[in-house]
Length: 194
Image 1 (cartoon, one colour):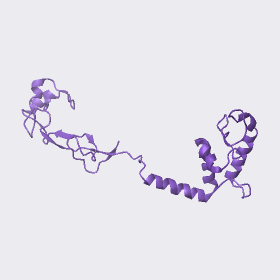
Image 2 (tube, one colour; image 1 turned 90 degrees about the vertical axis):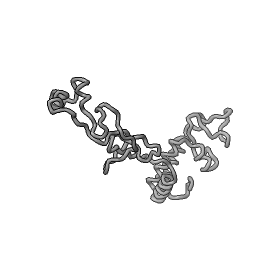
Image 3 (cartoon, one colour; image 1 turned 90 degrees about the horizontal axis):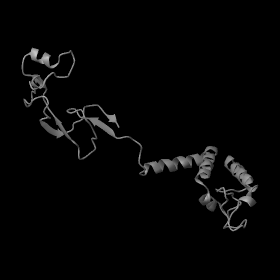
Image 4 (tube, helix red, strand yellow; image 1 turned 180 degrees about the vertical axis):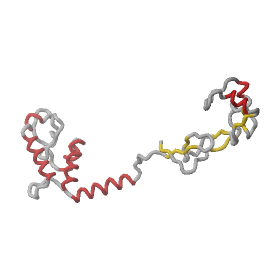
């Protein structure tokens, strides 16, 4: 593949010709390198552009072209020639499957005991500290109502009343940290993406 005048014109080759034609108008002013014009050592212009007439071959032109120019040329070729589209699709799909990192988010789970989110693939899984039982009021219902004066309120009135609510699993007061230490266990059927 190259820039040859005798082949049928494709949109990409027409674009290259326009680039060459636009660039040839300002060749004498824009070339730099010890004040000389032409030659293999004077490939770069002050504005950073190149034309194919400035370089001896297409490989060198590709090496010296700016990434922006290469991207626009590649887009033009891919959209104008089906074979180029197939090559680009094959190349980029192969490159993605050959170890480039994917942008998938890690799945996070919620622990069924402590309700903390955790990463199930983490080998050093955090410890889950919880009570397997539930809270129980040790006195009568009137005492429970004194703990929570308004319907649905969770703010205890005093420490003495709070100490009468205990866990059924270990009989410790409700403010004590969990009595069971284990690994996190995921809730069934729930995944959360982070």
